[in-house]
Image (cartoon, rainbow, N blue to C red):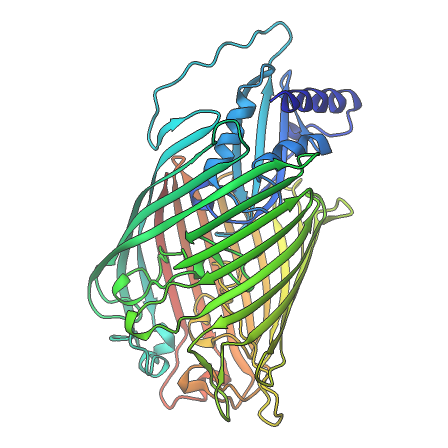
Length: 578
């Protein structure tokens, strides 16, 4: 505790004297829209900021010494956010003699995307004396908390109404051939239904004596359902099952300089790699059919996740084992992924990474024009380069590359994206502008090599769901996408974005796609516009409103004898997070 006290005092004194950092209170700083900690559980931490308040002024701390605090409980760029470790770290800060109050908030620029962690610490003014912190009666969801432990209830839930006009381009029966979930697929005309879920549970962490060992665990049960036929399945349904069920051990502040830390965990928990290009938080489980949550997507934990995270300063090395939760017990593919990721993040401009992933077990096969190729044996090399705030002008660049080969088959497939944009924090509404091109290779049947890209478990609403409607019919590979996004903040808790997607095929051969479009006569797949409105209100509630218009191109329309009208979608959902 002494080092944290000295660090905060020294950090504030240096920056107060130097005046190198502008007053944040006089700027329109946008970190994104504020999100609730329980909603961000398991999300990657994009950046960490510490704000120091004294004499009515707010300063941005950016010293290496201050980062020692963020390192101590894994609250640093590149790590995964866990609410109970963040709350323990906050309790340590709050009890420092010179600190009057402390709090943290989370922000993100897209639902389910990486978060920005902002810690605010207010110093006592000259002449003030720190009043003893009295133990307060625990209020829901908190059960108990000390400097060394925390135990809390979990309570998440949501409900919404969804309307599809000409769902699946009025060709639902064709697009869902052989899909056991599709007992009543949408077609020409309207389809309207509602969905709900509720997830109660417990989560806790404690310190073992005076050691640097912090065991933690979490468990929850999730009940979901719908009131009538959704876009695929007939009738009302309700389904309940265990959602979270994991445990782990955190060992922070190891080594001579206390820069080394370990975090080991296993069980039913969340996982996301970067911003979801290969593995997204929303893709760990299935939600369709009897689970009645195809649009709420309430189940997100993997059936089994083993994580080993090693941190040293700005470098972190992760190992992960993933087994997704599949829908049908009698149709299990037993697909399992094994991977590792080495990353460097300086919390300013540079975010670099290199990941290696393999499918170590699976009964699934890739559909080819010749003999099928097993999923098992696929290998992926995935470098990442993200650059933030180039030249202090708000310019940012993001790119990832995925090169796929196979241990026992002739596979060479490419997937990559490159995007750039501009964030104007000084403008009213802090608008951002973003363009991205994504390439997911298709297979050329004239070559002996199989080249269709496999996007693994990609996802993420507003990011790697490339077209809310087209994503349901496009599959993974053989997809070239231009994306243009304009986004702004009407208030600090209110975000409005508009996305335009233009889709083309890489190859006319589309073997591996859905049955009606196994081949194309044109590479023009279509275009889509999506408007998204996010509003966090009453502290623990989120309203999410979405409108999407999909316009099919010749690659779609020329595969059907009947009409394929434009596809309109409307979604209105309220979530609660405690």
